[in-house]
Structure formats: structure tokens, C-alpha cells
Image (cartoon, rainbow, N blue to C red; front, side, top):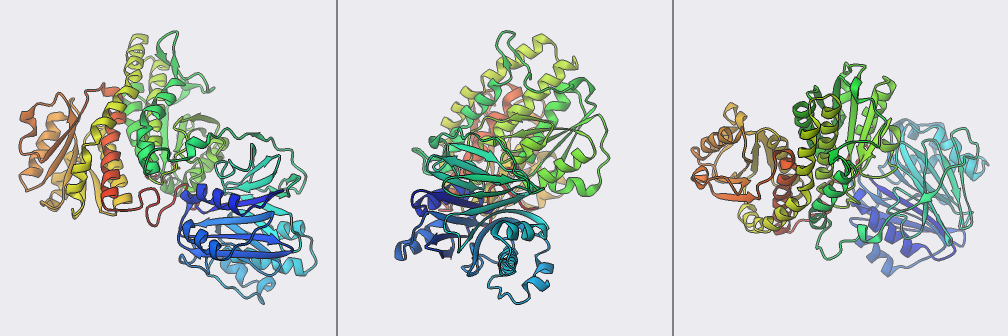
Length: 607
Ligand code: F6R
């Protein structure tokens, strides 16, 4: 949350800073700002609202230079406003910050900043105040940065410029991501490598405690001990088409259309084409010894874990506990020493998931992460990592990362089941064949989901929407409700269909449509009975099922949406498509900002 950028270049930097902020906007979009060092004077502009507001402000009052910083904000301390927007500047220094300074209130009362005139309600401004004080005390730029960050508690990624040094940027990191980049034209720092893709061809992922000093010619990195650190720069490996909308109106629409590719590419890593099996060979884990699995994540990634629980228990007969990362470590969990703790995250930067991972590492429990963003903190900090191959996900509402996570969890459970001899080679080959059908079935599901546009039109005035399912369709119902509410702003709730009679049936009325996910199988008839209980109380049902469901089972149902028949193993993956499409079409119909829903941001780097 919050995106920061700093660029030192042989060329003017303002357009590149704006370009980078555009790519960082997914991290927050309630204000934006830029500061540029021009002839030993820092010019800055910062405004409430989206980046477009800043661009508009800059058109009226232009300035440029070769060294500058920028910020896009997701408010934590202080409401979204011009004064709380970053950069936070004094006459000598200007900075942008991502993270939270937990001891900001105490620091503001400290002797060092007692004479400082604070202009904002943010925690970040105290960093400016401290730097200003140490500069006045005669410390060098580097010393004042070192001294300032030594008193900060909490998380930060910082980009700092000083008015008396026209060409240098200082970066510092603890707990929040910071990437350094370089190309022949200059050097840069930013919250992720995507932001640096037009100003760097090589990047280096900085470590906690690092301070970097860069100008257009050079980039130096110092570690926690203040010694020069030799960090590796790697090829950036980002394809610009990945981070553009292409022919689509929204990133979310594009990313839903990328479900087949994300799932296909993710599964491909695990297919042993010689044997025709699912085999995980790229991690060195002793699966034999695993007595229990913990699946830990937040939001949509957590719902993928809930589906994963069914996979591991059904195929590998291994007990599984699912935990929301934000709750996990606070309940002082008793973890079996032979357990494997699996952390699932698209961004690989979610603060709660990372903190849960740190907790397990301290307990010396074996950890594995399932992450989409390469070299992200969670990927680097876990003992083992499997990447989802979803490609860059920009829309704030996660879609293709979810089905890619399901693909890894399914493959991992089949691999574990094979190792534990719960699945024979023949069964593994059969499952592998089923899995190979996923991309095609997903394409067909997308094709059919265009019809949900009309359904969306019919529910935009609903009081709320209920999502129901049983088995793996229950976590899908949770995912459907989350996606729906976060972009439509209409309340939605996911519930196990069988639990309705224990309370929520009381909510049923004609203005509360019920989306019921009913794939064929052992729970089909039980779910149909639950549907009829809803209909009997005046409920309006959208049933999501497949081609083979008989008309007689859809009696009195408002709408039936049919998917192609698909193998049970990949059902949750294929059924995700209409769930995501319905949310998307509803939000579009309502005219909402689909990719940047209000109050939210992607990559939640605060706890
Ligand atoms: C919902 C959504 C969020 C994320 C959650 C975890 O559409 O995107 O609920 O799933 O913030 O994020 P990651 O997967 O990056 O850890």
C-alpha cells in the first residue's frame, strides 16, 4: 500500500515518475505527489485523489529536473487530503514513504522535533522532521538518514532527496518492499520492479536494513551494519504488454480472460510429460515426513486455501488447518513440529501473511510459499517457494491469481498423495489428463459468461446478494461474495448452503438474489433441497451448474447458468469464471471504478 518511486537520470524525470506512478497506482490511489530537485531547490506538487488530478495540476504548473521522487497513497494515518499527500518536505529535505511508523506519536514529542512545524496528520512527516534536525546538527546526508531510521519502529520504504544535493536520492527499507533499478541512462528505486520497467533493465531487491545512495551514474547499497553490500542485479524480465490493458476496458476484464493462460502455465510446471503424471520436482521438500499442513493467507488467497483443504484431505489424506494470516500468530497456535506451513499470496508482500511466515520460521517449522510476484518478500523468506504463473495482476480485485493458486494447491496435493501412496500412478495419470483440460474448459466458461451481463443488469438494485455452495463450492461462494462486494459496493455474503436454515434464511426476500453454485456430484441433491428451501421463502435463485443438470432440477429457479461438464478435480477452477464475471459485469453496470475500488489497494503491506 502506497507506491514510491525515485529516479536519478541523465534526462528529465517528471514524465518517467508519472509513468511509474501509473504502474504503482494499484497500491493506493487516494492522493499522489511528486518532488523534483531543480537547481538546488525542491519543487513539489501533491494533490488529493487519483494520479490524473496530479497530472492535471502539473499541466498548469510545470517543472522538471534530473532527480525526483513520487508517491501514490493509501491512507493510514490522516484522511486523504492535499496536506496528507506525500512528499513531506522541509526546506532541506523531501521524502516519500510506504509503510507505518508505529512510534510516530512518541517521536513527535521528542526533543529533536519539538520545534518542527508539522503540517500533516501523517506518521511519515516525523521522518522529515528528524532528517531536518540531524542536518541542522551538521550530520552528512547519509549520517542523517542512518540516524533517523535507527529511531523508527514499524515498516518503511523511503525515497529521500536533499535540496543541497541536486543529483542524489537516498533509499531505505525495513519491512516494506524496495527495488533498485539501473540502465544506461540512470538509476532508480521503487516499490516494485513493474514501476521501474521503463527506467531500468536490471533490478536488485533490497533487504531490510539496506540504505541505497544513487545518482544518474552510480548506485551504492549499504547494509544494516553500514558496510557496502554487494547485491545482485538481475534482468528485470517484464514484458510491457503484461502491464497494459491491451484491447480490454479494465485490467480485471483482461485478467479474467487470462484465467486459461494463468492456469495452463501454472500446471505446466508440474506435468512430467514422459510419465504423464503430476510431479513437483522443483522443490527439495521431504513430503514423507509431513504430518499436517497449515494453509495461511489473506482475502482471496485465503479462500484458495479453503479449497486447498479439500484437495489435501481428499487426495493426500493429510489433516489441514486453514488460518487467516491476520489472526494466526495472535492465537499462539500449537504447531506440530512435522507440519508444513504453506503461505499463499499473489503479491508476496502482504504484511499479515509475511508476519505469520516470520512467526513459523522462528518456531523452526518448515515453510513453503505459493507466490505470484517473483523475488517478493514472502517468496524470498520462506524455505521453499512455488510460483504461480499468472503474470502481473494489476486489477485490485484478484482473479487469475486465485485460479493459479488453486492449480498449485491441487498439484501439490496430488504430488503429496502420490508420495504417500494414497494415489496410484494410474490415478495420477488420470488426474493429470483431467488437469490438462483446464485451459480449454476455462475458455469455454469465459465464452459462456458473457451472458451474465444481463443477469448483472437485473441485480444492480439488489439490497444484497447471498452466495451459497457446499464442498469446494462453499469457499467459491465466499470468493464470489468478496469479489462482488469489493467492486459493486453491494453487500454480499457467502454461506454454506446447508447452514441457511440455522439463521440466514431469515434474510431471504425477493430483493436479495441468491447465487447458488451447484456442480454435479454427491452434494448436488442436498444443495437442490437447500435451494428449494430458499425458493419456498420467496428467494430468487441464480443457479450455476453444468450442461448435464436436468431441467427438472431447476424448477422455479430465476436463472440457470450452465458451464461445460468438467472433471471434479478441476471444478473449483472452472466455476471461478462466472463468479468473477458476475462481479465484474455488475460493477461495470453500476459505473464503478472496477480496477481501483474505493478504500482499497492491492499489496497490503500494513498489518
Ligand atoms: C480480493 C483481493 C484481496 C487479496 C488479499 C491478499 O479480491 O485481492 O483479498 O487476495 O489482500 O493479497 P495477496 O494474495 O497479495 O497476499
